[in-house]
Image 1: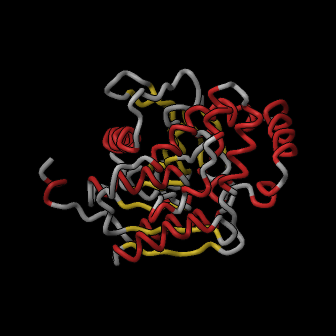
Image 2: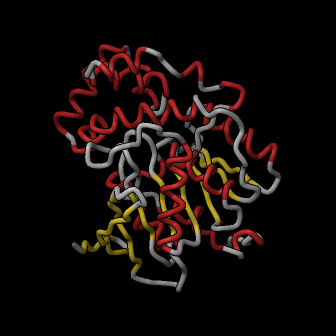
Image 3: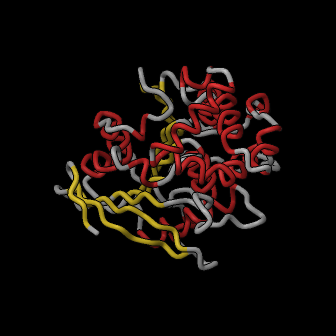
Length: 296
């Protein structure tokens, strides 16, 4: 199916992983192309490729090349996560997608930003990258955000309570996150009953649980990339900014910027100025392949 959008058209595609799992993808082809290799966009927790359909066309237009947004595992029963799920699982999938697409850059949002950092650190110079509100757990900063009863509720099938605990603990929904838990449960049920994004969030709850646990259970430091850009929303929760400070303090080649007045969901909104910021950085800072990458 081809759908015409502002500045781009959307095509459907799939990427088959080595274990046979087929990851669906949206491919945005800009009307005005600059001959650039594709970008890959990695989505966050609780959402899917569909929730970036307002932003990705602007990114493709600003980049002047294709933008590929693929569904990560765990969105529903058709995309199962392996029993031994970890950040490495996600980084392996991103490696496969970027290699098969011949990607020149990666944009990662939220947990997708975490995956981007892991993959970029393992393959320095393979592609340039930008993250928006990447999540890490330096000095256990996320431990206080995690509510143990979240797993209890999800395992018991109590999705309203699980969704409420997640939104309250992570604080990614702005003022909505501060509502009392009973009110959040009602809001979650209303979303899942009336809006496609609400139904997708509920479908993704079990998989998102594993994603968050994978950050908390990361056994130790992983190689951080040495070049790139980390963006944060001005109104995003503080722990995203703590992750950015941690990376940029240890890697001088990684830069940080704040997008004033934006919340955590910035890359899910039709924001051409944010798309231009990301694309401009990627154009001005192309990947510099290392000898290991050149030898592959």
